[in-house]
Image 1 (cartoon, rainbow, N blue to C red):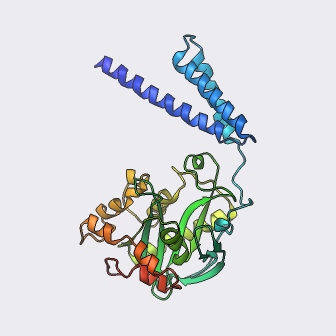
Image 2: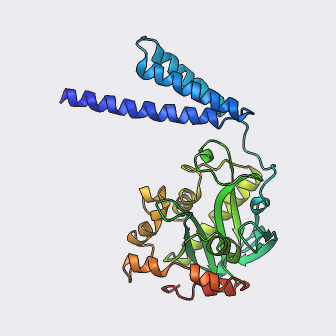
Image 3: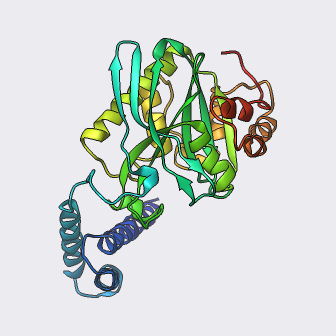
Length: 334
């Protein structure tokens, strides 16, 4: 038993060392040093030295030297410039929304409603939306796949009985010339933005122009919970407008924040690995009772794919676009 315990401790120590070396090497590579060749060279040199110090050197003090170097890099990384709200942003994320709340009434500025001709050819247009919380009746959940698999983008739409749905998507805020880079997003490379927009924009660009498979699920959320959740979102939107934050794929991303805010709005339940592997989030919602279970999940998922309906509604204005992408979906009582 003691030998097995020693092997277990050694295995855990090895895994921790691997993770530390990997993270600090990437931290050097994605640091604020100005030249890519310099960052790459330092990252390779650091990784080579630490691997030698931890596992190859016979000198007794070398692991301590490697640990000191790691701590120095962590301290350096923590000093990297704070997030900024003033950069040369891509036009899709150029305008930070803001919410003005007066009791039941909400006015939101910076609502995105672009006209797309292709994924990269569009006419930017931002506008204002006014909604009343008393007319908020439900919540819908979108899962959009860059490619079918365990990783996706998720966002929500708030449903009103007297207006078109209001979509909110938690995303990176890339500068002009950059796209989403998953690994880089864990190393202070992108700010965070909550894109508020019309479904003909946020859904249409993904389903029609990017050709991403997009699934739409009705959540059986109560009206009160949906209203509490929207208030949480609006508060966060204003916080980001005042104090920018970095996006982080593991800690400050789309699905992680959706679950976090659902908890604040009254959700009951703990962490599930599908919160990280969010391409599987549909099954999590189904088996945790947040979707209608009248149909088997595979059948529900098949019928929740909206790409064909989105294609057919391509030129439709709101609220017609939103009505048409829901026309073939399984329905639940609101």
